[in-house]
Length: 490
Image (cartoon, rainbow, N blue to C red):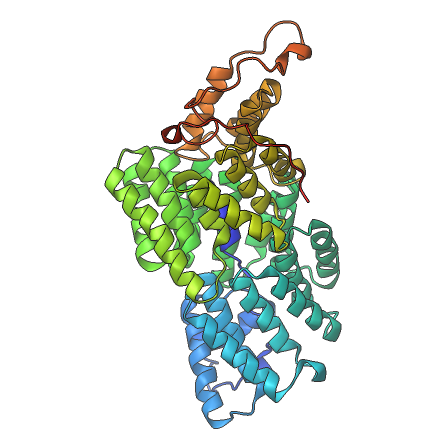
């Protein structure tokens, strides 16, 4: 049901640039002859210096090198910070949840040897990466703020703050941090961060320009693959699946382990009717990286194709993979809330997502998810303020627009419903294998605006009947949306 889920689950925080190569032992070089090509660990160190992503083999090589080094030098707090941050990045980017406790242990050891009060900014940044991997954005923010006090001119500190503030929905703070970051650094990583921030503001042209700049300026294969994946996401969000597939394919050629690109390609292939290829890609990515958001997307594709048994199996994987991630301390409430709203118990979805909101998670994605869950639970009046918040100043998301339009339709606000459901299909007519057809049916049911001008457009007559396409809770429940009391977004 759209790339918003993936964006929320794939934190994408990078190894801190402060982990400079001088902190890590470098293998001896030949005294004569040409300088040998750098090995995987050296490439990972170079990526860390640039604040760029390393590939999985490079990260693994760096981790192995630091573990060997620390066996003989257990009091090297900077190497413990390098090791912990590398483990945290491996957990965040490759869904290796077993790496997260190892990251925590290494970073705590670094802080024992050199406390934060004595200037251990490297460990604090590592803890911010770790908290982001667990989707604990409050802790990620707090650790990054501590690091900023120590290293206010280190641009990766502001990058970490942008990740945390985005997760919390503090978009004013995101803008301030981006301004500071770009004043300190104007390289490809800054362009990539700016592209994502502008996308979240709905500034598509600025986002695309920065995304293209990031691809052009990228150096290593993992860095370029990440930039190409981002470019593909922007193409998908514009409703251009062929262009998206091209970018995802280029990313996968550079980094075969880029599972976000593989899952995204499956989604775009399905939009073009190439469902056998889409199912192949979903099965491949779930075999290697069984993330709940991937299982949810695959399940919805299977459901749309009438593959009931496989859809049920994929929905079962949503719960099992979320359970495994939760055991490693990873917050999965957003994806579980979306799953429950559409395929399980909407009241359970409301409970989960309300708790997240009250914990301070006020992102556009959280607002949309909570609004939709309230709607599916038959509380459309309470849902509308959240849907408005998700669409007011956020990304041009077809999913958000569709959700808002259905809520408005349930409340008899037919003019706004036509506008928002129509906008969802104009933004991306392929946005969901289940909901895009429902959006077309809803728009057809709404018909043309009545004669006589705006006064009649939002009349109360003809509210959606129980079981109507796209209205209220799913047809199997036989209940009607729009019966809840009014609510405000706090």
